[in-house]
Image (cartoon, rainbow, N blue to C red; front, side, top):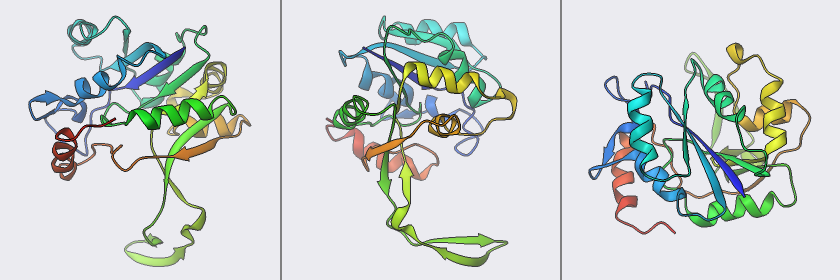
Length: 224
């Protein structure tokens, strides 16, 4: 069985000053609810640790818990690392695998989830990723310094998957106040090898207003 951690406690400053992006509505349905509905009916997922902002925590806890009894509300911290640690520290270790998935990435296809889980049968840590197809350049003060060879570059998505004991060990190893790494990087830093599986272009992260139009298109399609 699998633990799923969904951090949704961020402020989403790049998206809007008024409302965090995970709480916006797409075709009258809240983005975070769309995300949760992707996961609650997957039998392999035993518990969903939903990390929510400190503000209005009890109200939101009641709201999202009504979606499924799998959902365990976790109070967010002052940083992403603190928020994830609040969930990781209480993970059910009886569930051998733990996935961490962005709260603002609501359209993860089931076959991507399956690829990550299958790969975890052979490896301790798996990330979904897409090969970089654009030309990449290093710049400073708007000046191009050099062109980067993209052959060995990938663009990382979530869910990132780990053996539960490994991700717990990784979070015990860090200074939560001064950490700005993604979960796979924390695992790399304690010496574990991270492998990747093919990601999915539909698995977008809502970051700016420009992402909304594409999100509405995805809402009109069946994601399977």
